[in-house]
Each structure stands twice: as structure tokens, then as C-alpha cells.
Image (cartoon, rainbow, N blue to C red; front, side, top):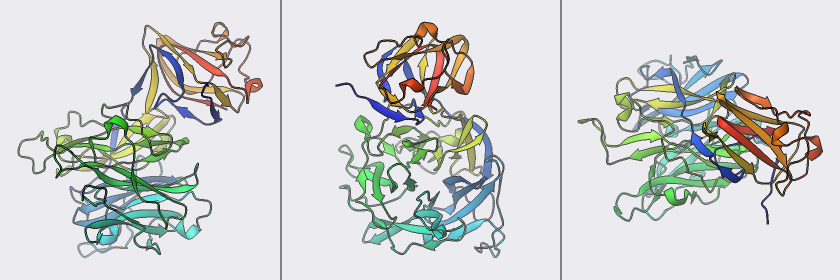
Length: 457
């Protein structure tokens, strides 16, 4: 029986092989963000070299960023604002006294601020007083158990603890390492209508039982109060490497696809002789279509340390929560560089819109045919790039792989260039409305080109 995907008018990314039925000389390749300007150097009141990433939200034409300022043992949460996601300011909020003054951007300090992560609640039933929600870590709530605290706010600056405290407990995962010692995250899933939590877990290490693997577990809730038991996510054959954070988020242009940017940690390695902490790390990439089973096909780094030696210390290259649009054809992530060095900082990284990965054909050419698709819309729009010698051609086929008249590859108007939104055309036009609701296949013929996403509009 042929698998048919009903994609409606959803944007589909090429971060996995979900669309593919047949491929010839086509590969999926990962793209790395381009390092851009610094958000902040950790050199202001309350900030230390252990200050680190947090979460970004774009709302009401304003970018907001919450990050951990302060050391691991004395944490604070500080706040940034921006009109464009590029130039950021530290507003003087007058909320928390530090070093004898409230002239700072600190919004919380003390135990309530531990490992805090913020999101804007997209739940249509959420009251305005809970427009923003957050989670933070409660250390050793019961015995050696960590917990997760819920926080609520109407403006993202003034916070209250949720009625139930804690909302999640770190139950024993078999390693006796019952902690949420990481940057944990949560959000409202608009597709499934539930809150989702991803936090630190541990996996047994047969070779070193006293040193379990750091990994990720998941829980869900309909009300942000009552949560399911946190269970280990499925990373396939690549379960056994240290993933110390998760930075999991639904992609805002395709919320049915989860993206994760965990920090891969190598605890036994040291690059800089004499550095005060062991371990080196880098950002990696993974994706999921159900939130439980994750695709880890890209094993190369998404965010490498590079030539900057200060990125080869302990726990650098950590990606924060959130992906946001910051310009025409671009999206941004935010990450920590130079951890524990005096020049520690937050930095912006840029990708083209939808540009996490692509279906790629080399100069010698390649092609792929999709599984049968049912769609809604009138036109096919693609996000692509070719070389000057490259091209992309598209054919519409029936479910058995026979080309439809007038939509054969020979009638396609060859595409070349570099565009985020290109309407696919044939010699007889671009209108595909007569195929709406009917299973079809797409055949892509490509040369020296990348295809990032497709969408019927």
C-alpha cells in the first residue's frame, strides 16, 4: 500500500526524508548559521562569565530576550529588548537591587531564577494575565529530586509563581541522577493543543556506570499544571552521546515540525591546556514530526567552535530557545560564545528563511520523486538556490508515476537563481487547482541546486 501524505497548504522543509519516495544522486545537507554581531558582552551589573543563553520571543513588533545572568550558584534572569532582533538594549527596570542599585535590567534573582526559560503562550484559552509563561528549576525538592517550577506573567517582566509548585518532578530514570541540571524548555503546541516540556535526562552508560549520558526527556500537559510522566525521547541509534541542552522549538513557519539545537558535550576532552574546566562542546541539529522520535541524520556540527580558541573551552556554542525572523529572507538564532572567558558573550547567527537543511543535487545532476501528496491550493511555491549553471525542473505525476499532460518535465519553465518564494510554472501556466484533493506525485529534476522548502499556496 502506498503511503500518501496529506500536506494541505503546510510548508514542508527538507530537514528529513519524509517527502521522498525515490531519489537519484540527491543528498540532504545541513547548513550552518553565519555568525553576526554580538547581542551583549557579559560585562554589566549582575553578569558573569557563566551568564548564558535564554529564550527569544517576537511579539507586538518587538523582540524580547531573557537570559541567565550570574553564576551557576547565584543565578539571575535579565531582559533585553530590540526593534529588529539585531540591535539590543538593556532597559533599566528598577526591579532587583544588585550591588546597591536597581538601575539594571534584572527581572528576577534567587532560587526562582534557576535555569529559567520563557515563552509566549499561544493557547487561545490562556488568560491575558498569563500571556507569558516560564519554567525554572527547583533544586532537590524531595530528597535528591529536582523539580520544575511554573511562572506566569502578563508582560514578561513581572512574574508570579504558578499555583501548583512544582509542576514536574524529576523521577528516577534508572541512573540515580535525578536532575534538571540544564536549559530546560517548554511551549504551547498549536497543532496538538497541548503544552510540551523538554528537560534534562540521563541514560545508563554501560562502560562508565557512574557517568551516565546526558540526554532529553519529554512531558505534556493540557493546562500547564498537570503533566504526564517525563519520558526519554527516541534518538534512534545515536542515543549515546551527551546532549546537555535541547533548545527545542516548533518552527514558526511550519509548527508541525519541531527543531532542536542541543549542545553536544565531550566531557573527557580538553583543547586548551590548563583551562579550569574539562569538556568541549558544539551545537548540533535534529528534527521531529511527532516530538517523540527524532531524526539525527546530521551528525556534523550545526554550530562549531571554529577558529576562535575561546570557543573550545567548557560549554560554549550553546543555542538558546527560539528562532525568529529578522529581515527579508533571513531568520536568526542566538547563542553563547567563550564560556568562562573574560570576553564571554551572546551572539546572533543567521540562516536564510527555512535554510536549516536542503535537498541538494551536484553539478552532475540528480532527481527525486515524492510520495503521493494530497494538497490544497492553486500554485506550488519553492524556496531554492542554484548556481548560474544549475536549474530545477518540476513534473506533476499521477499516483502511479505517469506525467499529467501539460505538466511534464518537458513543458516546465526551467528555474534558476536564488529566491525564497518562487511560483513554479509550466508553459501552460501555474494553476494546479484541478489537482486539489487528488493524490499526486512531484518529480524534481535538479542540477547544482539546493531546495529548502515547498508549499502549495
